[in-house]
Image 1 (cartoon, rainbow, N blue to C red):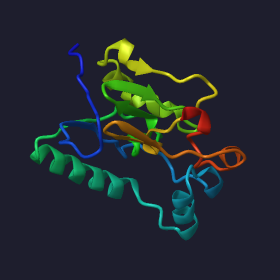
Image 2: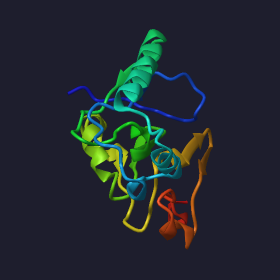
Image 3: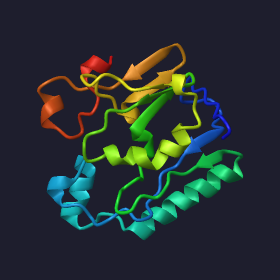
Image 4: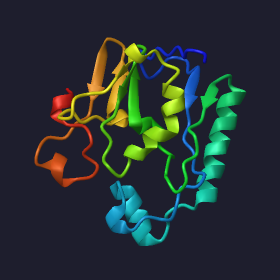
Length: 170
């Protein structure tokens, strides 16, 4: 298997390779109580939650645009009845090192969709934080010589599903 070379130093350099999620077989619309974020909950309650086919169409358009511009697009393995649209959240790549996110239990199966892609990285470049450190990829932004981290402090971290990076991650 070819080893994957990834080196992300910031959010504005030329994008060469990216993982784009999938909406294929994403399962039923969740109940409002099981929504993993406030915006999803809002759309579930309003009856405006997007359809699988609409989201698939949007993602395929994104993939086409990226490929037309020379970006190599990787896709997760489709897992039945699992929303894999936001696969960026499951980890963060900083300067060639993948830091696995500490996903909330409802989202942890998403790793299975990108394990094959991640297995192409040298094992020494994949880090799993200790249990007390909670990280979500979307909360971490590499910015050259700085890393910006959005996090929640207690009691918010325990009270809100959207609080996915804690102070211990900093």
